[in-house]
Image (cartoon, rainbow, N blue to C red; front, side, top):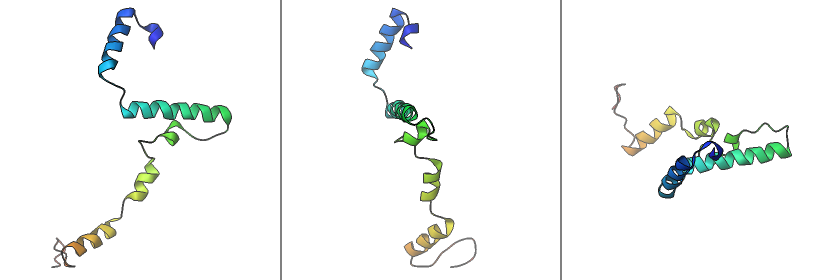
Length: 92
């Protein structure tokens, strides 16, 4: 990246990043890519991806498992109002 820059572009880039630090998502992407490269170098048969090492973006399976179903949410909502559900099905 730096090899293709002129000295003026480099000076602008340096000035910009002195005021605007790298954000968390960018750092996470760089370190997860680095970890993936190291693991792949040690074990070329690995099936991991850079997303496997990301701390900020969980996998889709983790997100799907954490979401409660509609029945669970409705049971919790019934408990809030004393067990009576007021809704479009005519109960209550």
